Length: 271
Image 1 (cartoon, one colour):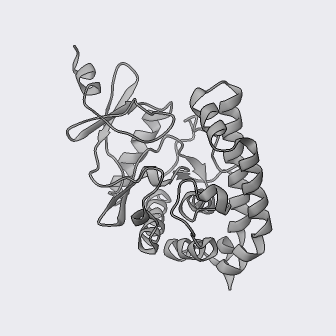
Image 2 (image 1 turned 180 degrees about the vertical axis):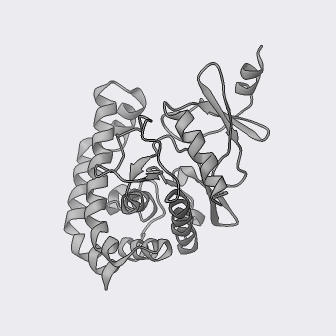
């Protein structure tokens, strides 16, 4: 068996959808399927570290069989149904602060214009900074109840900071109607208050606060289109998840709830 094969025989790491069952840890190294943009993404991760952002995996190497090796970041990662500790206000504040650190470092790094960055969940307006686009609880490492690192940059693409905040809010507020949220989150999250906490901890500008509710609705529509595309191509993981989570009626309910509460969210952010 080759060294690469031995690496894949390590400890299986759970979580995620696209790479479920294909991510392994071997000591201080994680091996996983390499995204199409792996070379450009690895260069970006190195640049982030050089600009002081130490809260992301460091690239180790790409293997000959299409996998990537990254440094393992120790800590706790919450998986659905999410535990109460990951939904505390202090945890939320730490996520906002961590995202701001990522953006501050990323703003100083030129995006590789030649890379074919994934467009499925990217900001339709584009941008000059590489956004993570998937800061869900499954992709945030915690220690002692505080977010300390971001992992899984597979969906990273150029965009605006407010888009990345909107995508993050979808998971961390969460920006879901109560019936949908109840399936994975502790009961009773106060969405307007938590949205304000995320905006405050990130340090959104006055203009970005006014834009955020609209951008969240746009991001939600992009997420729905992402799922629709996966289902249309026969992806069994997303097809099963759609069926188990209430079908398209669930997505209709989320969008209607966002629209109905638009003014409430705007007031919470701007008052």
